Length: 373
Image: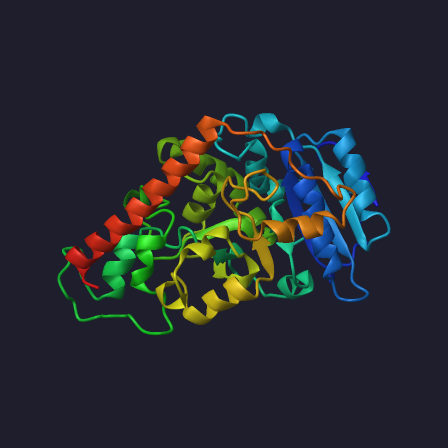
């Protein structure tokens, strides 16, 4: 059942909050992937459970809505639709595959009914491969949220992490506190990370540079604490006050405002595409056992980066798995058209690969020369 409203939600209290309540946000460009995300989620629920979804509609067409309705018909899922005022976020920066709908999650405490104390937030480019009831039952405690370390940019400042892990002070001299062991993230992972410093002004903000940085595509949100501390307002104030430092859109504000006050989900609950860039578990930026679970047994597969599996070029190693799930929806047999050879796309992709290879080599050399193996 899909119920549509305008700016506020009148979700009735007969919703069983023992079953997962999920928040999503999408616009037209993510409507088809959203259908895949929701279908995969409901397909992996425990017997007798129901999924309750609140969708923040950033501009989904009626034809796409028709496909979503057909996909979910007869399944144990309810969808309540809110159409927020996009003027609330239109001044914020967007780029690549990200639209202003990415910022709508930051309004969760304002848009959901006050009696819903927590919600699972899911991006619309996911495959859910395990029972969301497990995620729903995790205790958020006093944290603002539970989230998984971002496998692409796992540290607030990777060089600071390396120095701290290897027992070096800011000047690179030994301080007798070497923290490297087989149960910890490996400093040898740093040449392969996607971004060294996702919060570029971390020093000015008073954040620990060696601390972990999380991905906002899968979160369990503590709405009770959000409301008591007016978190939406603080998140938007952070984005606007730090415009020139914002990287990775909503994630910047979430990691800044929640620094030191978020709980880690097991890594398998948000497998980012960058997991395939690390040579092995011993060179991973998370504990080796967590890395292996994320890589080989993901509970949620997250198609991060701009190279999505529904694009024509086969950049993603799990592209076919997406189509296997797509073919269980109303969009079955849809495939992207071959755009033919486009020099601009070819040039961009190959230059990116060249820069990536050079970057890894340079970081290995730098790490060896300045902070040891």
